[in-house]
Length: 210
Image (cartoon, rainbow, N blue to C red; front, side):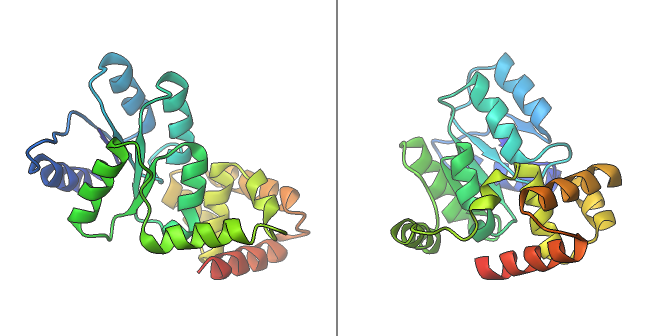
């Protein structure tokens, strides 16, 4: 099943996958609620291809709901967002892999096959980054980032990418009030004194990830 709020991308992935002799798209959904309804009604889904940013809630939240009902269902994130920023969080949320939408089609097919075998799929560069992080885990300078919810982390990333609250609200289809609440919670959890401090931290955090 493909869960993505962009119909054209969903259909493109479906066509690519359906060309494989041993694969078939069973269902498509454009948000988490629809995806869960399909899963509860039909038990024929072997793997879910899930986007990070959807119309309602983050894919990082949706995967938790999916695994509450279907703990053994493998989920592969397929996203436009840089895996350096999101892949580790996706794995912690319970995903079995992460593929960027910019990758060639054969990478997606290979990722699906690896996940269905029970393996974890990441790009070679991301594997190396994670291994290096484990090897140098001593004093993690960004431990406080792990206290953020998936939605708060998403907002922090967008702040670091230069977006205003109004732009973030539009990108995530949320209200300005919700975004401002996220900003306040992020500042509190990261011990940042004001909005300027938040912007500096977010910008530095994103640049260091790259």
